Amino acid sequence: MYRFAFLLILVQLAAAQQIRECTCAEIQQCEAKYVDQLVPCADSCKQHATSLGANYDILKKCITDKEQVIVASMTCTEKALSNSCAAAPGKMVNKRYPETLKIAALAEINRMLGSSGIAGQVKSLLATGKKFASCVKTCMDKNTKNCIKKLGCGLDLPSDNELVQIAKKCAINSGFNTAAVQSVCNCAAGAAGAGVKGLTGVCNKIVIS
Picture 1: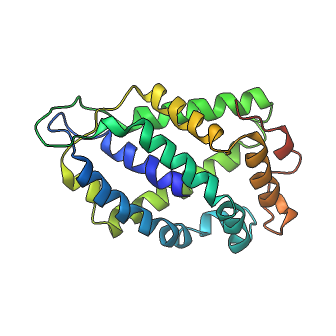
Picture 2 (picture 1 turned 135 degrees about the vertical axis):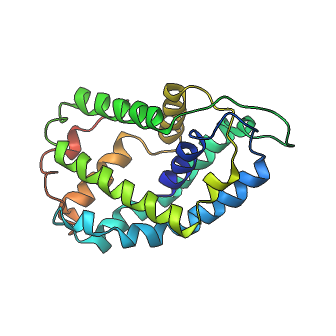
Picture 3 (picture 1 turned 60 degrees about the horizontal axis):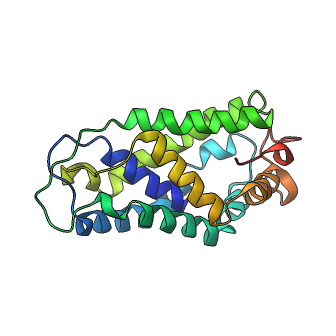
């Protein structure tokens, strides 16, 4: 979930107008606010998880048990993009669109699911996941008083596809690899009582590549 907060910030900033480049100090302030709101907002959107038959508290633990590698992934991505914000104001950046980054991320997820041979089996789960993510985003925007949007600036980011590959590479190198994802999936499927519907026979087929 921590990695989601950082990616959400990138999505928000990708929507900024072609005006000034955000300073690093501004980004750090907003990032802290979003991270603080992540878990409370996820909790407030738990109805989407429970609609899949999941025990939300156990499902959340399945994810938070991997907190160390998730935070490491986020830190790695931040370092890779450390030059995207400005030390001082003055530079202009190109306008970016959040939907294109979402499309690039979903395309990569669908590619990996297709390669694993499970795309059809998890289609409904992905739909629910998108609803959950949208719910969390709306909650975080509200609780941070649209911190990112109010900055009125953007980041000097690489292309959407490059961003997705950077985040994926960081995740794999930080330990959020095939084994880790399978572990979370098996936990969610019911090994620890979470009981998410639709994951039977899926988890051990997942390959992060």
